[in-house]
Length: 316
Image 1 (tube, rainbow, N blue to C red):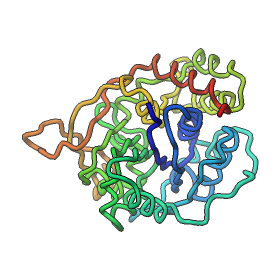
Image 2: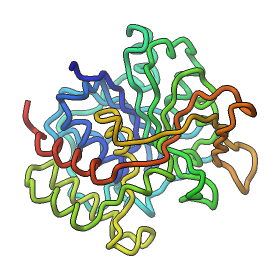
Image 3: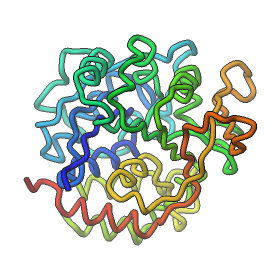
């Protein structure tokens, strides 16, 4: 089977970092056309730099990186350096990448690439605030013709939020952008906290990855260890949730997840519940059921996949 063509929009970020390393390693399954970065976990300058660091670790400098939007559509920026560390990549040893990001803005590149692509030929993955994606959709709505689906890490329902009582960080960081994206006619596959909290990086799983010994595996183990021992993810024995790698794992092995059809509206006005994702399963109430909402994940299978793909990292 030919690799699936993918564009990856992200804000690295500890868990984005693991997702990038997985995507870079999975050459047999994914053809990554480019990485677009956005302000989110840390500033736009740092997310672009971090993507370059991870690309170099993975020996994937064939994949271009395009830096994107520096602030949300309407709200003030909300960064998460308190969680991801000052650099955005925890305590991963950093360096200045050999290759700079491309000169073209991420949104311009997204529009040009999607307009030139055949119908439904590209999977768009978004694991940060949806500012780049929403801006591209607002500027050129016809880009949806080329999108097979948008796989999003974001949102929360039964699990509650992780940045406020009811909001998950990626949606909260730019709720107006999220509302634009969820309102499109594109097929959306959403990996909210309800499903990502089922996938835990226990110390035993991290150790299994670290023993692979190659640079991508060692970096992945470093990032996961940093997340595991954050106070917000205690106790460490249960392991930190593996958020952003979930959409990448699904693209590679869809059977690892189960979904329910729904419609999603995003709260954009309330100061109390901004970023809340109203997940409506009742088709008679909301007939536009364009979202598949993740409800169940095979955690053991996902970590087996991560281990298998990281073992291939650096191999052509």
